[in-house]
Image (tube, rainbow, N blue to C red):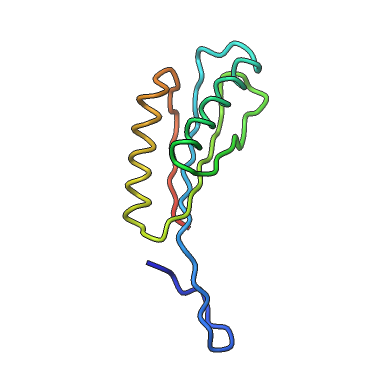
Amino acid sequence: MFFVDRCFENKYIYSMPIFSYQIKMYLPECHSLKEKRGVLLSFRSKIQNKFHVSCAEMDFQDIWHSSLFEIVWVNSDIKVGQKMLEELKHFIREEFPFIFTEREEFEIL
């Protein structure tokens, strides 16, 4: 499914939905910024390698026990994008049981 953004000189410009998943995490086992950096590096690389998405730490970079992480991907089918969200949540729970999720936000742009 493509969305028609606008018509320009009788040509339609199409765009695909952008999926955004934000996770505010609590990292109780991290006792320094260096430990947190190692955990988040592993977290980011495993998610990027498995799901081929973009992700980054968006806030709390200087707090060793918290992180706000955002994962973003584009897919032409909304149902497939939402299924990927469920797979992503399951993967995070299974692969990183020591990370506690304080808040989650999901948005389709």
